[in-house]
Image 1: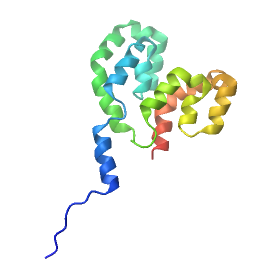
Image 2: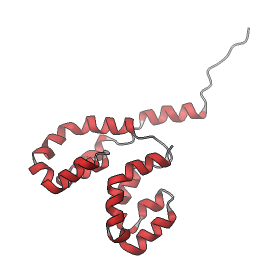
Image 3: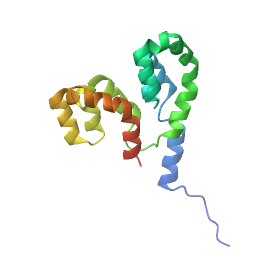
Image 4: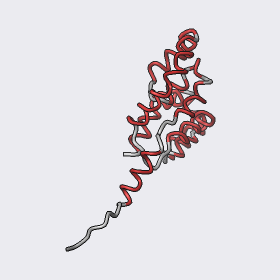
Length: 146
């Protein structure tokens, strides 16, 4: 009789690790919530339409901003389920986009060297590329992590 011991593959080990580490932790979402009247937490959590609404209405006149204080845990959990885990970390990319996005640091981090240098030379394509990435950064990372 041959005994077969359980031997997790490296893929299984990575899966277990990533299950424990969400792609969009609520703590980071709360940090973006501080800028929530501008919709930053909603963009981070993959809700660009409501993020734009928050931006143009001051977080729906601050009422929606306060309500989001209670909704962030469920939105963060949904974002962590929706977006794939992989070699590109969402939190690092979003941090780079937030503070150095006009210079293309997030694009360089994602391996998009040409557009990263283009952003650096043109100020995020004169701000238009920065806004585009604000709306689509989660999807771009998800595609690269596939």
